[in-house]
Image (tube, rainbow, N blue to C red; front, side):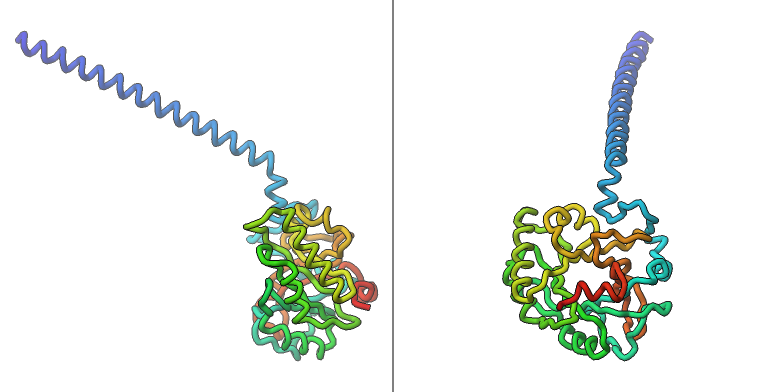
Length: 285
């Protein structure tokens, strides 16, 4: 009996020890969970406080109507709101097998007045369809423009020369276009801007006309607006319904999902920020 009592006491002590350990463990995890919840709340507060910055990087910052992927931009309603302006498209080798005889209007009956075509990429590549599409677009009497897709990590002057080798411009064409969308991986933003200026200056010297700069609205606001204010801008924003296009924008690219008879794949839709008459002021003289 005595021996059994000792065992019971011993077991009781062991159980008590286990209970204390369990309690300590529970207390630790409770504290850890509480700490994690506090951290999550702080992060949420920070993200909310910075929502305008994040929205701008996603191209959503505006005081206009915003559209998400679930509610796509109503192209016809945007074009209706700017019916007095000039409409156009831009294409590259990715729009394969274009029937230029059918290319006349954007779905809904909006006449196409101008076409931009990608001419070159980086320091050595030409767009595979540029020469053919340029000739066809000219034959159809569209106002034509050529653009260069700029690669931030390649030599800017070599890129300028690549564009020049592909493109001959005449009176009535759009000025050359520099398409900059990516951030550099191997250099600073300041060095990128130096390269962009070099491309622009080399191309302007060759053609005798100031180039147009194409980019997204967020990229324009964050990296280009203050340092390239002397240049016309062609801005892409697919999520905002602008009833009044910013005066600093020469062209607004409002969608990449346009439908045009004669082009099988979706196409970019653009609005020149002015009438067909004022458009002539932007063209090569």
